[in-house]
Amino acid sequence: MLRVAVTGATGRMGRAIVQALQASKDDTLVLAAAIHRSDSSLLGADVGEVAGIGKLGVPIVSGIEEAEFDVLIDFSPIEPCLHNLRYCVANNKSVVIGTTGFERTQEAEIHAAGNKIPLVFAANMSVGMTLCFHLVQQMAPILAADSDIEIIETHHRHKVDSPSGTAMRLGELIAQSLGRDLDDCAVYGRQGISEPRDRETIGFATVRAGDVVGDHTVLFASEGERIELTHKASSRMTFAKGAVRAASWLASQEVGLYDMHDVLGLRV
Image (tube, rainbow, N blue to C red; front, side, top):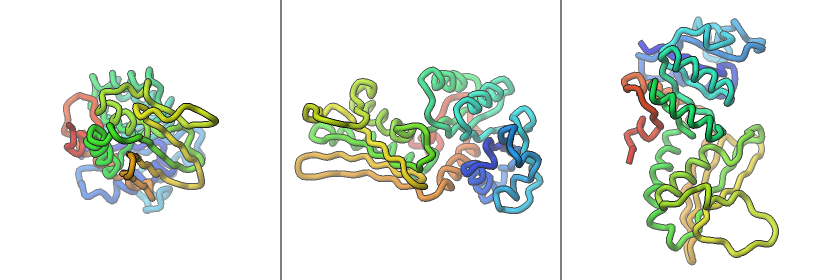
């Protein structure tokens, strides 16, 4: 059996992961620990009841140090996520990280952890979005010579990082496929009077509104036609299912840094 721990277990994403674990057809997975912050009023409560799926016999605990597990699924905020990662490195535990918004130095720490433990780190755990990542790498070299490239993303009003980690990953993959450096060619929003658009740039537009789970569109616009690759997530369950799939896959992997391309066999 693969013992799985879930952080942020009483939050929207955490509850979805608990539900996805219980619905999984992989009978080797077992929810072994549910972790939430120490000031939560739900500490000690059964996580299954909190998630609305009935009693599971797994009480919510206040820290990773109280949990017994083999693999951690972590969508917690940046600082708690890094704390959990350090614990997993020190105790030889596998990790699936779905948190976004890390700074470069923080990402470097995550990458270094991949030299010590099996680790899946992905900007988006959705199977559909991972296919979009795969597709834009094939589309961009064909279309870029005659197209302006724009990435438009919409999320709920509570999301704090922008552009989203998924939008940034789309931009990184497009830039890499074109031999460009995203730091040099990205344009984040536009205002006022400016020079005509430079075709070598990759534009980003961010919308924060309502309860949108996550919409992303990559627009390739040329003279006379437009191609739009769009992914719309209507439920957090799509990310939860992807994370559970990653945890199951990770159980048979050696030490290394992986992403959802590896999980789905799409590595190019």
